[in-house]
Length: 185
Image (tube, rainbow, N blue to C red; front, side):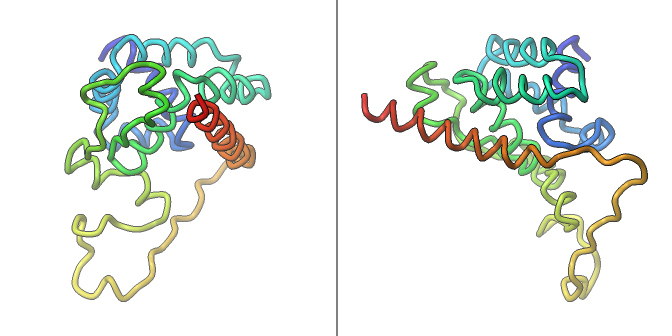
């Protein structure tokens, strides 16, 4: 594993709110790092990882603010970080916005694609909703008749994720403002 893997995994943990164990358990972490390199280039991937490693210490208000402004609020890194979140949850790389490509240049591999069949099956979305991916990981005859069972929360202190919806709402508003100002040009 490269020296970039640990920061990538740490960033992914904070962006997805899933544990190292869960992300490693997908078997896709190295492939997703390679996907970032392929789609946006190693320079932008390295900038994203450098911004993450430069954040204030974990579990501090300063870190939450820095994550919002330095990474998610960045014109260069914000769309890439949001695409990484969607990649982990769905197994699909979603094409970066036209505003991003106009600003930072087109990338030949920047198209919407499913990374691999395993990526679909191991998407965090299924774990988050307590379901199984349709067409994969069959549960036996008639299992469709029963509603999904949401797993019980793990024992121990719970992370405070209440700021996350606000972060995404703020980022969506900022993205809309940037897109509007770009379209006006």
